[in-house]
Length: 269
Image (cartoon, rainbow, N blue to C red; front, side):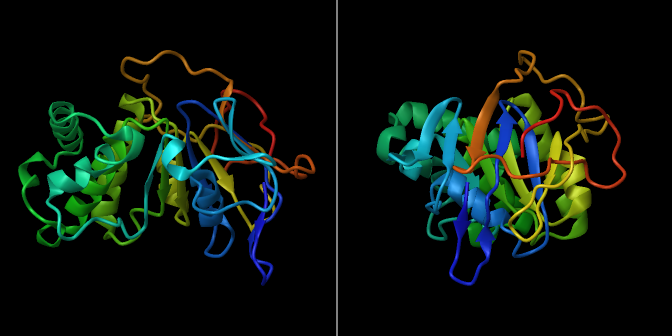
């Protein structure tokens, strides 16, 4: 897959497979193409070339470009993008009130209550975003992303505005939720410690054009616990992106110093 801008920046030819239920972090400095990759997967950017598939279903290619609202994914943005005039409950409910995801009122109320409870924000249901702390606003954004039961969760540096202690707390809660719900997560960050603490695999980007090395598991002892109520992971790819001209030279590799064995072995990059 490729998405380049007039000044030569953006995402150069890049390919990646992600298995269902994996938590994969995209690690790299500002301007290396991390967010461009995420936006292409979401459908917010149109790649110049390549193919994107979700569980074998092509959502972008030479003859298809599925709209973002039909890709069955959710995204948490860096600025959270909460509606300031809506209460917490209405913000969380919003994805269930539009398009094909629109559901009946009784079901909406049940799903909103469940999503708020998962992130511990139920007590703030009738407050507005400007009445919440940064950590509480982050929980609202996560609840809104989860309420529609997405097949894929995309996160674009969502914790970067929080202080160090709160960032550590939220990332632990997010990792727990990802495991309990067996979510497939693609998480963009420039923080190496954050990527290592949360991820099954870390993909390192540089200048938008190279995935380097070979992939291995980087899970901590906490995150290596079996998922609740989930079947063993399948090695079949859930999300796949590839360049039309073939695989890019090089492989994913673990960030410096991590140890472990890849669950599924070497993956194309």
